[in-house]
Image (cartoon, rainbow, N blue to C red; front, top):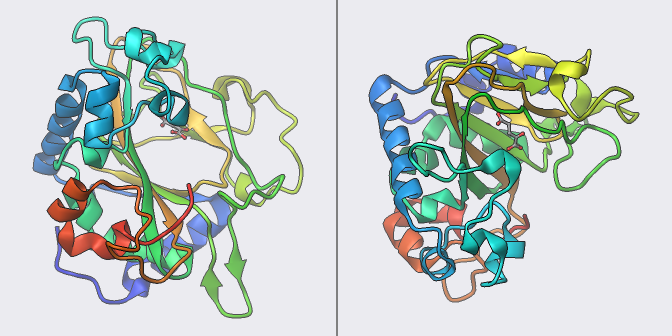
Length: 294
Ligand SMILES: O=C(O)CCC(=O)C(=O)O
């Protein structure tokens, strides 16, 4: 990883800015090296080794992919071994397909939290102070379905809209993401990320199939390799193509949103992160303790 980067133009270059504005995403090729990729795989292994128990999840601050429905209900079926059809545990390892608030259950994603390039990038896209609003991984073992295409510019949604303010020459995006690719997604069989380029600026609902990317004529695969980081506005219509072979597909999602308050340090904070995370990442409190909404 390079030394701190001072200017947003060095990070959001004219080429990246144009591509993001036009298509709604771009890929940072080879952003993380093999050692970092190995560390992120180890993070997922660590999260999967945590027993899927309400008390344990609550104590750590991690969440089930059912989010509030499960985290507010100790009797939720997920604590009794039930899973969403597309997030079933791996048949051999038993590892669960997704854990939310992942940074509360492992410190092995901390280099993504601290990543100076990603911080400047997402701050620029938020148009000011931002915070990390969600962190999770997705593991799929093939063959596996892609998933329902979601979001888009229409109807405008305050939670994920894309905006560029021409008057003041700045972005005002309400939600942007970094997806760290951990598996080979360089061919269609491997179930790459799916996107409808330009859909973050759509003025109409998508008239095509939203159930599966492979049936939507406007959805394209975004091919990527381990260590690449896909940056996109959550206003983009997106999901994934199906995994067609028997490979394991893994990626890590970091979501960034504008902070709604300048400073919300302990004592007065509304951070979603428990104290053990704020202590471990004390140098990153500016992006973990600000108030925001998810
Ligand atoms: O698995 C993927 O690459 C896409 C998942 C997705 O659309 C999401 O988490 O919002």
